[in-house]
Amino acid sequence: ISRESGVTICVGCGWYVEEVQPGWVRTASEDELTERLLSELRDGIGDTGILPALIGEIGTNHPPRDSEWRALRAAGRAGAETGAAVNVHLSWRGADGLDVVEALVAEGMPADRVILSHMDERLDRGYHRAVAETGAVLEYDTFGSDFLYGSLRTRNPSDAERVEMATWLLSEGYAEQLVIACDTWTKANLRRNGGFGYEHLFRRIVPALREIAGADDAAIQAITVETPR
Image (cartoon, rainbow, N blue to C red; front, side, top):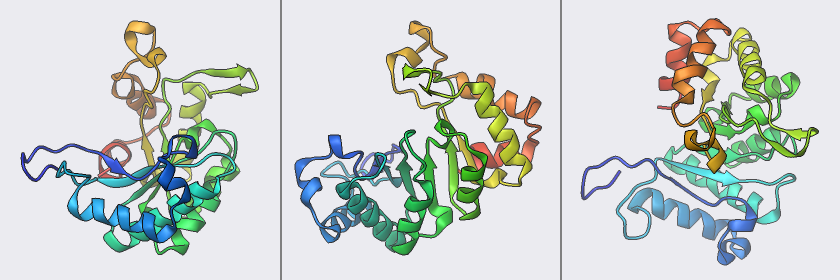
């Protein structure tokens, strides 16, 4: 939120994967990183006057690297102190969600204020159930990205597979721990380049949750409004 203009701009604070972290972040202590996050949450980012809406997307590789663990623990401390939610990028190459939640909770974060991105890139019911049982929010956020990463062994799930997993998750009673999105991150996602575009989520995926997953109005409201809020 910009205090000067009153305009709402949704941004996060924190640091992504090690490869794109500023040099000082890679060597900073957890205390230093925590202080930077607290400063931005309380006073705004730099001289913009913009207060972050949440902490994240905190980046992790598989396995998470030392600087990423420090950033993650700092995010947990800052989130616990301020009440800000923490959103974490998970690599599709591994199943690190439980370790991430454990690390954040150890710093005082309530599990239900932890959002794990890209869970739908690794569709494993046992893994998803275990994460859901911690109380964390599962983010199925790569709808519209049916990509190959070099071979058929390293591919994104299809939207049909994502909806199938969402159907199962809803049947298990976890509607209030699911959020959805289209991670529109490449030119290939855009309509002008043959992708599904930004409209995909509400034009096709939400109707699919109603028609295929059997989600009722309360579930749709939780997934698209209440839990994100």
